[in-house]
Image (cartoon, rainbow, N blue to C red; front, side, top):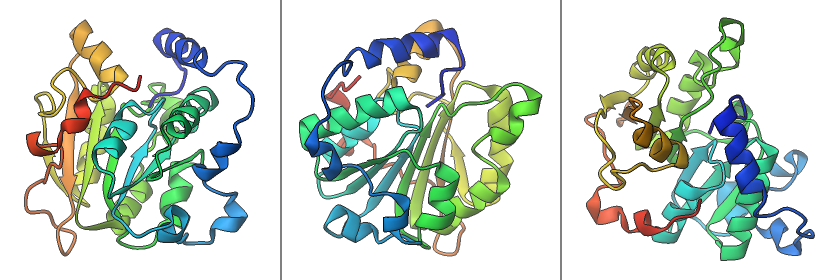
Length: 249
């Protein structure tokens, strides 16, 4: 999810913050937030953090949680990690997860780069979801972009064999930069059409941009048994998309 770099982002931040403004601290939050970094260990024990074993699904930059909460409701046997740095979105996300008592969700504000490089052991993540990451369009800010070569290498390292990355962006320059880096580490299948489970968009940004007629650049990347994919598996195929009816925005 993009940070508040534009007018539309600022407006969205204002609207979602109203949902939790002036609410007192909720003692239930601690059940869903990751503990402080010194308590996590490197790498972290993710089965212990969720209190059970299960496939790990990670969304980086999940905003208020529309997509991740929908997945968690539809797939209760899997463990979901929601990563969001922006404080306004994070507070909304945390409150929504707490209100729904989603025991299969944990939320964190840890930097994604640190998470992958230090807290994830090898081959521990089944799916990564990254939708509309901040493109940092100014050249002097390109170094802040998420999909560096190091990040892509850690993404490959932490995916299980057959694990999948889902990526969408409306920024063509960023997509062109990211594409060869991902092709070097996973088998990439570009996905020019809408997602089958959510033809109107998986996220608030995608819904908004499709209504505006903006082109969306999507891909699915799969890690094969030896780091080479054999075609991308999409767990959002129609048989898995019951969550698409849940609106958490």
